[in-house]
Length: 104
Image: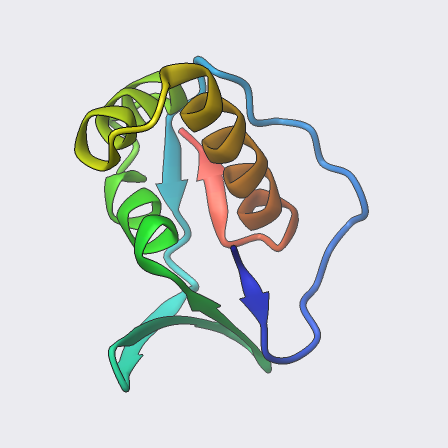
């Protein structure tokens, strides 16, 4: 999952992401690849993403709902939709709490 490599801003519980939400990458986030990992950088905070998290980040374009993203991951990674939905929702909430994603 999301690995914080420094301290991240959080408001401690934004709950704006729901299954019908269409997450959108924040324009204030820079990305960089290093040693095969994708890093999200915002201010003095950096987050390292794994393969599945990178896929979720890539699909968070303001057009795909969380349901759409979970369905894609279910198909691409061979996991059941219920598990994919829980994992996607948990992850986008983490990103939203850190102001890395907005709800379009």
